[in-house]
Amino acid sequence: MKRQLYFLKAAISVLMLAFISCGVGDDAKTALPGLSGVYVAGYSADGATLWVGGAPQRLADIATFAQPESVFVSGDNVYVAGTKPYVQGDLMFDNATLWVNGVPQSLSRNHSEANSVFVSGSDVYVAGYENVRGNYIATLWVNGVPEGLSNGTTEAEANSVFVSGSDVYAAGYEYKLSEGYNYGHNVATLWVNGVPQRLSDASHTAFAKSVFVSGGNVYVAGYESNAQGRYVATLWVNGVPERLGDEIISAYPESVFVSGDDVYVAGSADAESGSDYVAVLWVNGVLQRLSDEASDAASAKSVFVSGGKVYVAGYEFIEERDYIISKPTLWVNGAPQRLSSFGWASSVFVAPEAR
Image (cartoon, rainbow, N blue to C red; front, side, top):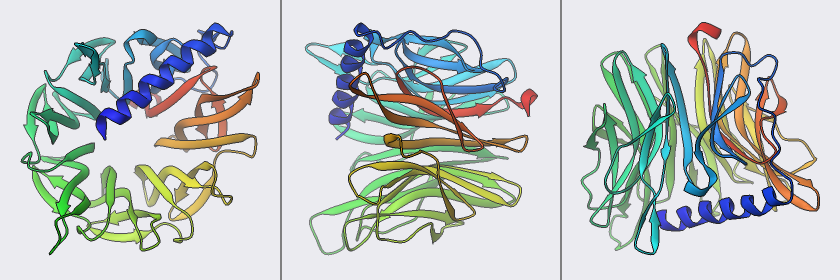
């Protein structure tokens, strides 16, 4: 599955090269108003990109197929976690990478991926996976040193990391066999200080995508399959699942953020027609649609709340010049801002000094 995802990313990047040759890629290099202190990681017509205040900074050129997934700012340092592939023979493989102030650091010598970064004090935590001798191991790198969260007997991956006090939380999934059967499903899993807690069971498929700790409560956003084969948006609070919507259409939460008494969950949901999907934001369980009717499809990948503003990073597919083009988008209190003529946004973070 991981290799298929990689080649999908590579194919998208090749298509981007074609679009750029058609003139789609002349992006402004200046900051955008109202985005001071706002950092967005993603992909643009120039390649792997970090937007600072709306102005793009290239992390890697388009030919590398690098994919930033998460951004975190601590003091004067900016950390971006993602992948920067390497070539082995005729194949390319993802390699977990941490950019620190724009300089890439490889985290692994194996086929691997970094999905999330969190900084606490002087310690840098990165969550992802490593493929070790054909086994996908959920991995937490602490200051560059890998710690396996799973034992490698089944596929597992960590999608998100959060540190609160002395406790380290990682959310993801681990494949488990269904009781009495020789097959199983991905089980939504929360690792607390390396110890797994199952949020679902092996009777159905579930994924934990994001974790956030606030006020002594642990929030995990993800989705679970139902009997009809659809995915149900789910928020686990201290391990107890809460459904964010009905089970008529599939929905896919990607990010959770808690501010005061309010809980924000960003993701996507199938459109009513079932043919496309739309970017959505749940606020205290109430669904808000972010993308408009002009987009063919859209997804919200990350949410951050600061200074009374709600920032959501993602993308929208817009018809332009006879193409359906992916636009990296930052919604600020629901209003979209295009960050580039082509690409997508994966993560948003507001620096402490800007809050």
